[in-house]
Amino acid sequence: MNDITETTALPFGLCDSGQQPYFSVNSGISLEDALTHLSHLLKCAHASTFELCDTPNPDRGLVWSALHHIEGAKGLVDALLAGHESRNGG
Image (cartoon, rainbow, N blue to C red):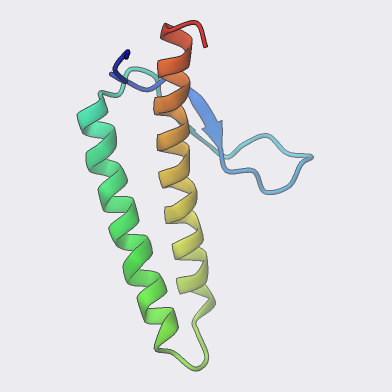
């Protein structure tokens, strides 16, 4: 099995289908650095959603915060997988 070692450039963050993505993961980010940042993103998403569960009238900022953290985490994972696929002819 081939190991995942780094990211490839991958845009993410579509507002709607008619716009280009707002953000991009850069190529060449090591697996360790990507996983460290991924852990931070998921920790923030967890904290935001935990607060939302205990709030009768949730702050929309917390909802958007959770959404953006999850979207960033997905972008990192997708960039790691795309980097793996491009190096292994997938």
